[in-house]
Structures are given as C-alpha cells and as structure tokens.
Amino acid sequence: MTGIHLSDEHQAFIDKLVKAGFYKDANAIVAGALRLLQQKDDEFFELQRLIQEGIDDVEAGRVHRYESAEDMLSDIQKMSATKKTGTRY
Image (cartoon, rainbow, N blue to C red; front, side, top):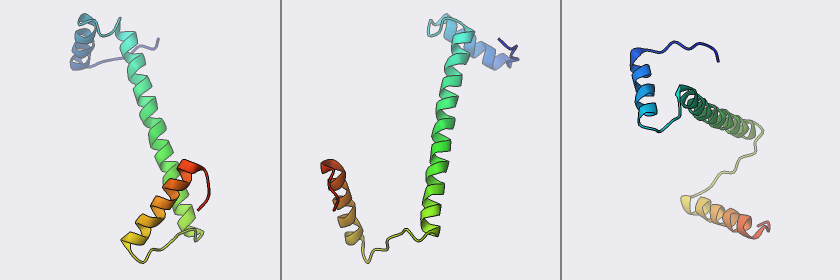
C-alpha cells in the first residue's frame, strides 16, 4: 500500500475506530472510505449526466409547457400509471 501521511487528528480517529472494534485495521478503514468516495463520485457524475440530458432536451425543443399546476400534476399521474402498467398514455 502507498504510504499515507495523516494528521494527528485523523490518526487518532483511525485508532479510535480500530480500538472500538469497528474495523480490523487502518487498511480496512481506508478501503471503506474509498468505497464511499467512489459511490459519491459515481452519484455526482450520474447527476451531471442527467442534468446534461435535460439541457440537451431543452435545447432540442423536447419540452412541454403546462397551462396550470393541475395540468402538470395530471400528466405526472398519467406517466406514473403508465410506468406501473407498462402501457403508454
């Protein structure tokens, strides 16, 4: 494993977690932290992709304007029913 330099505060935190029995050793803590970081990064990049997809839709004119909130809610309910039944509205 690559050498990692930790602050005294971080080293104390790792020691506390290992001593409490939550982790076997510092390597397990680092591996867990990296899994969480990767998950957060994956979520961030997926959000970026979805935002870009929305921007692309707007730029291509794939938008729908509603006259009222009730019209929008009605459309959302139809789409929800469609997803549940697999039919198109």
